[in-house]
Every structure is written in C-alpha cells, then in structure tokens.
Image (cartoon, rainbow, N blue to C red; front, side, top):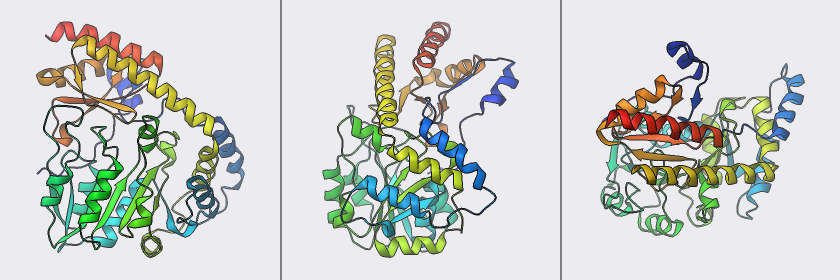
Length: 365
C-alpha cells in the first residue's frame, strides 16, 4: 500500500504562465462551475463590514440553519460540528479515535485524506479490496471484503458515499446491514461530500442511520454543490458525546464570518441548488454520450465528475490537454494510473474538452 501526500488540482494561473496561453479551464477539483449562489455572495459582501471582529466561535446561526435544513427530530444543534472544510471533521475523527495501537479501515482507491490523517496518528492502515467484477458496481466499495478485514484493533472505518475518485455508491440498506454486524465500539464515518448529486439520481442519504447507531459520524461539505470551496467549510453530524469530544479538538474561531454567513444563506437557496444539479445532470449525459461514441469506458458516477479509462495513453492525453489549457485530474496517487477524473463543467467547457480530446485521440493512437 502506497501512502503519499495530497496533490490538489493544478492552478489555473500557473498553467497560463507555463504554456503562455490565455484560456484555461479547470475540470480537476470537482468544483461547481456555476459559482456560488447570488444570494450567498450578497450576504458575504454585506458581512465584510464585521470582519474586524472575531466570528461566532460556535457557529450557532449556521448550526440552527443546518438543523432546520435536516429536519430530523433525532438531530439537534448540539449534534452538529462545523469544520474548516469537511476535511477538518475527518481530522477530528482521527485525532480522537486513532493512535499507534489502532487500525483504520477503508477501501482501496478511497479519498487520499483518509490515509494522510491516519498516518499522522501513526495508526495501521488497512485497505479492503474494491469490487472487481465488470459492471455498474466496478471499483465500488466491497463491504463483504471490508468485513473480513476487521480485527480487535479496528477503531475507525471510513466509507465515502458516493466515493471519490470513483464516483460509485452503496445503497443505505447495504451500509445499514454492514454496521449492524460489526462492533459498536468501531466508529464508522460516512463521508457524504457528494450526497446531493446522489439524491438527484434517486439514492438516499445515510442520515437516518444516526438514529440507530451512536457510533456513526456523517460528514458533508459546502465545497461541492454549494460552490464554496474557497471558503473551506463543512459539517459533521454525530451523537451528543462524539460531537462534544470533537469540540474539544476544534480550534476557536475555526470558521470565519464570511464562510458562516454564505453557507447559511446558500443552504436555504433551493433554486440555486436545483439549477446546479440540473446543469450537472445535463453535462453528465452529454459527456457520457460523447465517451460512448469515442469508445472510452468510464465508471458509473453519482457525483459531479466522471472517471474515465484511457489505458496506456492516459499520461500522454493528460499532458496534451494540459498544454492546450484543459486541467483534468490524473489518479496515479490513487493507484489508478490508467484513469483521469473529469469534473462536469459548463456546457461550453464540456464541449471544448470533447473537441480537444477528439483531436488528441487521433494523434496518439
């Protein structure tokens, strides 16, 4: 198993300078290409007048907004933890439950941050095998294999649903059955950074599992559908005791004024979210159709990205696109060297990608 450092998508300005080109599109970091809600932007501008003051250290207004949004009688504001991105919530889990005597379990090809935070706590990292049979579940999490790898030292299990970088998903019923069979002393983190996109395709969130299992932690992000990636804000939902513990690990004022306010407003802007989901769905259909025509295989995705298989030509195609100002995400770090991850862009961006890709494919084959 290879543990490495996280490598973010390449910077647009860096690519402009390196290749001396004006037009660069970034389809590498699963950002919402539409930008944030106008209502959220206006709220952010208004709140700037207060930034000479420290923000609310407990994010009370945002917690109340999330609690109202979730609308679950078994979830109260004190069950919600606000993080500097959902990554910070994941880090709280590692700091609270992992050490050099413990094991952490997640599926191979999972979000790289799971490895990084576990390594930082000197925990032993165990990776289960993904589904390897061809079909719609290819490279998704294999819960049966995961079950076989649980030991008395297993303290935390990370399950991304939908998963990154594969885009695959598990049914909540499957996750429920898995948690039911394992020790309640094991913390199960269900990472739902992309859950809105899965809901659009008819899949459910695992949030109701919190009512049944006090060892479950759910994490969510404002970086994806809400387009607030640059503000770094996310949240977690957990039992009273776990949420209280996490607050002991949290830095005071970890969420700035603007992030709190814009997240609060964006959460209530349903028309913006629905429009973004619709545009993503249309872009997904377009790209899938184009890849089908080009004979390019891809993983079934429940997110705002597609992971495509370009075989031995992957690196050449990636570099050729980069030279022409199109940034995709190579997946060598995830031990998927034959794949590229493509964020669904705007209609214009998607068409430009396909146009450039068609020309490059003719030259490399």
